Image 1 (cartoon, rainbow, N blue to C red):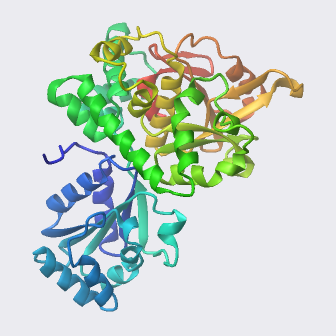
Image 2: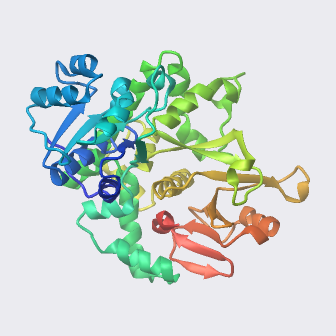
Image 3: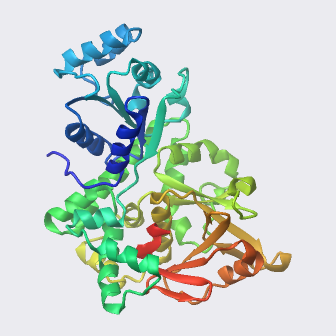
Length: 448
């Protein structure tokens, strides 16, 4: 079965690159496996070029690598031989080469410099683990390469997939004007958002759900994706045990009161430094998002990061839900109750992960802040996320239950009031503004 084609926002960025670059750079689309990289770039090739050649370096056509090795010194011979092998007619400035999963053959990535210099065709690359040591060893990264990231489908893309083209426009208007939607409309949108949170934003999962409107169909695909990630981790011989241990403990860590990574929860007697390579791999694979502790939040956030303290969020909240449940203990009724907020589980971990996912999809790097009020070494406060807005900062708290209680946020505002443009509480209720604090429904988090 061919992959279902969904409308993705990254498509406009591909168009912008094509217009602006006009062959002077290649574009690398990074992202975790199964987020839809291959599907969207191939659709781009079909619609925007007279012809294209897609080379999947996971399973290259026999003879492909031999052509690269034999003709790497002559781009004209290299491209013409690839055209013959793939049975495609190339047209100058009207044809596209797609190097899919290029990390599997770093030599092709290194040759980008010469492909671009040749100038006859455009070049797109896709990949994950692009910067991991073994995938860049002994090659020179081309300066002619631009990079963008594809994340799981955000709420607006999920709505589009469900045939809803108008809801997000209305949400955006209310966000920009700081106007509540009213309880009826808010309840309708929250029902949709909860369903999005459960099915997640992985295109295969969304496609499976839409086929029969059964959440368990989506769940089956998500389990396949988690198995795929697990297999990838086990291929990393040096760090496979650390990778799988960290990954499996993400739901438990996020459900804890203190979500900062603690090595003892993975293995007694270990230090955070023992897991540095494992976290590099997970971060580069885009499977997780790392939220780093910032000790003095301000416009220049990277001056005051503490890399030894961080929180870990899963790339997709739908996958987090699947990871949290026992494979043999769930049926459709479980997810129906979860969609209605009647399951009785700790929804805080899902809520906070969902906010992290929304912020990443909007291009934010993730930071949080911890501090003791009055420097007394007691009563540690934590603000979930801190964003930069111009020369000011925006503290963000995620509240799945009672949103009017936010002692950490209040203390943060008291300490850093002059640096703050506004404070945000993301909650399950409708939008409201109370002084310097704006309470946003969670479906607006991606608009921050």
